[in-house]
Image 1 (cartoon, rainbow, N blue to C red):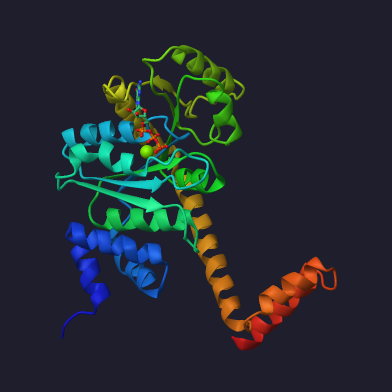
Image 2 (image 1 turned 135 degrees about the vertical axis):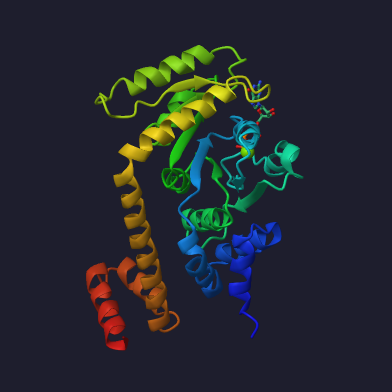
Length: 318
Ligand SMILES: Nc1nc2c(ncn2[C@@H]2O[C@H](COP(=O)(O)OP(=O)(O)OP(=O)(O)O)[C@@H](O)[C@H]2O)c(=O)[nH]1
Ligand SMILES: [Mg+2]
């Protein structure tokens, strides 16, 4: 008997086959039943990869830095995967091609898998799509998965908070420190990196971050985010950054168990809510949902009674 296509695909993913990994990621991105079946099949093999989130405003040098990190990781002979969430949003400069070009040095290395992912068109949510893509890489034996996102919206903050470590990039220049604080990234940074340290004003950014962090008091066993300077174009400071990542990883192994549990809990709740809404869509007749929205906006109905009606329809069908 020949195995079904999904079983065959997950076997190839487990063997580290690059084309199978690419196809599997496309499948989970499509958010259909096949993608879900694939995740079910590979899930038991996952949980070993270390997820590194790299975020920062457009053009701060994330891709250039990630490229340098890849080199660090490859020096230790570990397999690395990169998911670059393409900045197709209107907020960013959109260096989509640039992402690929800047990581080209590793294009022919079989120990490196680079994938870009569009921010648009993820009905099930971008954070879920990137998490599932990371699972595929994890199942393929990738030891480190780096996720690059432009830190502009809640989606990106969600993605990076779902990683094992969040690296926040800042650069010298007017208002960059403020920008980061506005986007809510000060709260998620485990390590702060002031990139483009060759530019004037890098130390001022370090100071701004330091004074922001000093607003919080850290207990003796708490992780106090370090602030490092890098120059991604030359690679200066990147080895020190990778050393800090290692130090964090060791600390997290004993101190971050609860965070892992919370992550799995929020993911379960998220998948459950999403599946439930999909089920609701299946129960309602076409146009029902829009009619409810209309009625609520015209004040002829209220959201609570509508939900009650939907719930009773859903429950009577199950
Ligand atoms: N001077 C200087 N330029 C840098 C440094 N790091 C990156 N750059 C330059 O900054 C520009 C943007 O770099 P990218 O790596 O594409 O930045 P990014 O954050 O990935 O950009 P997006 O993905 O579009 O948000 C490029 O021209 C890089 O060469 C640095 O340390 N110093
Ligand atoms: Mg980039």
